[in-house]
Figure 1 (cartoon, one colour):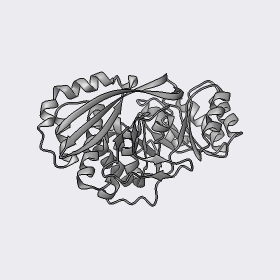
Figure 2 (cartoon, one colour):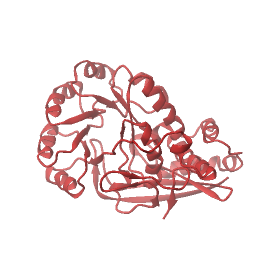
Figure 3 (cartoon, helix red, strand yellow):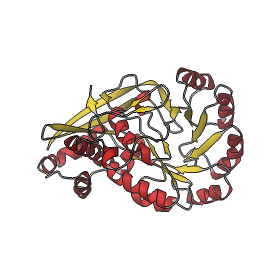
Length: 336
């Protein structure tokens, strides 16, 4: 196989703020794996919370480039095991694993959902994320993008008031993501008020390490709670089971589609709701997430929709929130 690496700096339509950071640009690494006239593409974004940069990921790949290019590629799962043995970070493994899956499907001439035996007649609607801002700005973002489901980022001193004001402007479903900014007491107190405002669920209200707090929340919160920062690796699914109603899997954090498929299966077996979320990827990463959509209860795949300009073609999210799956094999990705 031949490896292609490229860094992009993706400009966002609006400043994107969550409880711990704000940014106007997102750095991302695109990986291409070429074999037998086909090229598969994968992606992983930089992330200061997890101390990941594009340069660090590219540096990791360069240290094992020769091994990867001489690898006898057959199945993505075998390739993923090989990558894990090289001691690479999960973000780097994700980009390579996504590229391997896209390549594998293109070599077979089949989309991944077909290879996995899942149809595309039914899939959840992606939410559209509204980052933290002043209320008029948040309202303006909703008016600019009318959508059936909004994920509202919170973690301010007036979170419930924000939701109360936003509710005056739309009948859409609301999902709340506090990104670890609340305490157990705040979560339990906020939940009844947010439930009255037609909030569907809360995502990761507490710090990932606050298991005592999550025990209180699991016993007293009137809204379902979905794990995000508490559910990174495959082993975290079982740990989250007693405390959460569902899990939000991020491909970059767990290491790609290969472990994500196992996490989906494990979560369902435990009776958890299963969601896959994005990290403001381009359509390279989003198209990989889309292949999983028929297996999910919830999906957050609006990353490319938040960009001023996309760098790839793949899954298309229409204005009515329906999906147009690409006809190419794999994840169906082509770079612009």
